[in-house]
Image (cartoon, rainbow, N blue to C red; front, side, top):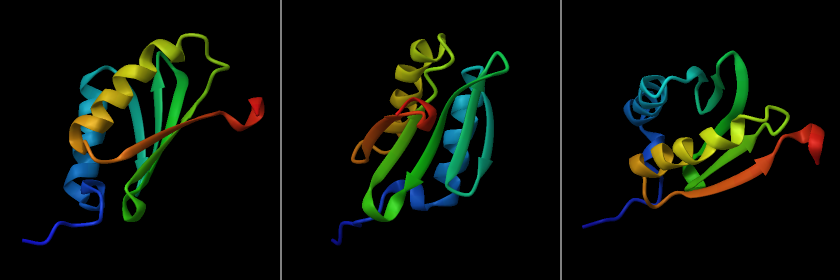
Length: 97
């Protein structure tokens, strides 16, 4: 039996499921291919960038929104629920680096 070196996020159905799970939690989600803009209460929480070939997910946390931190843990839980093997890297928004 061959174990795939790609993340489950290489499958379009899994990417769509990520979007639906986030929407079901009350987030606004705009998806374009492997990238997501995630908002709550009309404010940006983070962007998600899936990198399935290297089994990585980058989450860019927009800390200019004070309430975004409370949502970040839930978002990461959902990401990990769909692929437990993926590495999640959290970055701060570029303006704050």
